[in-house]
Image 1 (tube, rainbow over the protein chains, first blue to last red):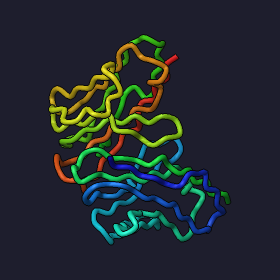
Image 2: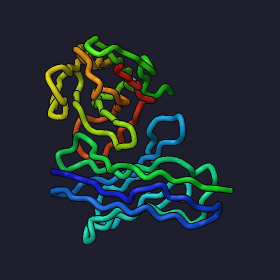
Image 3: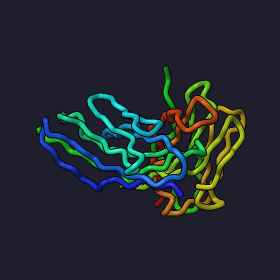
Length: 112
Length: 116
């Protein structure tokens, strides 16, 4: 079945540092890929998505590129802020088109 | 516009009690999903509705779990005879269309269930 593996946290960074969160997946066919973010005390919010190979999703300075050859969708941000402290989830929606399959989440803490 | 809402936000139940969790999706959204999120883990799929039809309930962990969406809008997730392992955050999500895997799911704030 479909699965998502993402790097375990917590990841602790200083403000303005570069952030990478690795995400790899296993799926049949051509899934859509998503990054969701959960800020403290809030619900899951879509951060960005990519629906086909080589697509790049971007939002709020975050980027991720759908790499079919490496089955990866790594999240990057060039200069993090304290407000980026949150839990980040990588997810896929398989070719059948219904449920989301999530990774375990990566907690990111940005210190001033 | 209003997002997905869920109630109650917090629920404490004694083991063996029945609970009912409500989800109000975004108006006009055809698809509705329920997920269970254990502490420190990613959400896991429970069940999926397209309008009032429950098309996938493969993620429901036992026959104590039951979900319905009788008029194709509000949905209720019911857990009978709650057990401690049912303690989790229950998330509801809705999406606009009924098919295809590119559509975005919008999540509610969740109901945190604690079973004592």
